[in-house]
Image 1 (cartoon, rainbow, N blue to C red):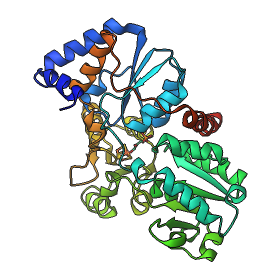
Image 2 (image 1 turned 90 degrees about the horizontal axis):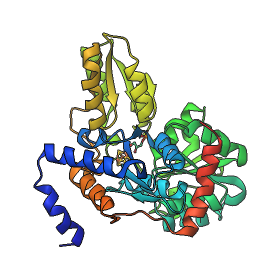
Image 3 (image 1 turned 60 degrees about the vertical axis):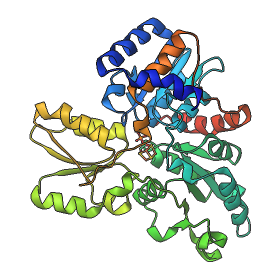
Image 4 (image 1 turned 60 degrees about the horizontal axis):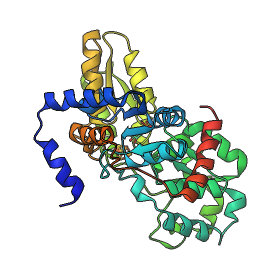
Length: 366
Ligand code: 13P
Ligand code: SF4
């Protein structure tokens, strides 16, 4: 058993009340030396301890602005990496459980992206004709790739503005890892579906003809979020049959057909704000992660707003769920003793180049 697993064993025996009280005590003791950032998908027992909550863009801005010595990120690995990249060298970014990755981010890796870039050069000059755009849900070395090839990072909030920027630089975009965010955003900007091709990295030239590559405006990586894949257009149809007045809102990681059937599409922060400002008596079908939807449901019920999760199946982000009060407390009590656990430190060269791509996004100010 690893030393962290042994150290955590003591925490697994604590009851909810003790965990809660000790987290509060540790936060108080650390005071302004600590900031806790919490993504909307965090479970309630963790989420309520966050100093700032939000979507990936909002939290990455917080990470760039805070002067706290310790940034404890209750989210997933790529988020803590961004916090490390955007904070000062003497600030420390921490992920309470190192197993909290993002399965979609893991679908693209540097080696394969470099292979695609190389293969594209058989048909065109990618450094002249293609802007690489990575969704923030990606490893730091992919952000670095974008930094050194004139590319940029986007989030679910700013993807349309980022793509506009990308097309001002070069004629085409290579978008990774989420094909759905790429397709939904491109379509919203007026790009026809046939000009957005999916690159299948198991096949030569991505399974595409040279002509298809020349004609494409967007080359989409074959990645997806397994949580958002669960929402289907038929879920919308069957709920609306029973409740025709329902408003449908989805995250842009959902399939194209789901987004097309939705009244609103946007980031987790956008979903929160839009549903929360709904009229009393309104009914919402929401296509995003379960923990967030359940929280909205409870918060808005007293105001007469009905919130329904889109899928009949339970689909939550199991990696976000890895951050539990036990890991949070273990992390914080370590810091109180002066022991840093689970530090996320991006190698300097990657961090420098990734910062270029992130800064291009922040400079767009959206
Ligand atoms: P947001 O930036 O909209 O919070 O999305 C992050 C994410 O991972 C959604 O699955
Ligand atoms: Fe990644 Fe999907 Fe989880 Fe978001 S919901 S963190 S994209 S696995």
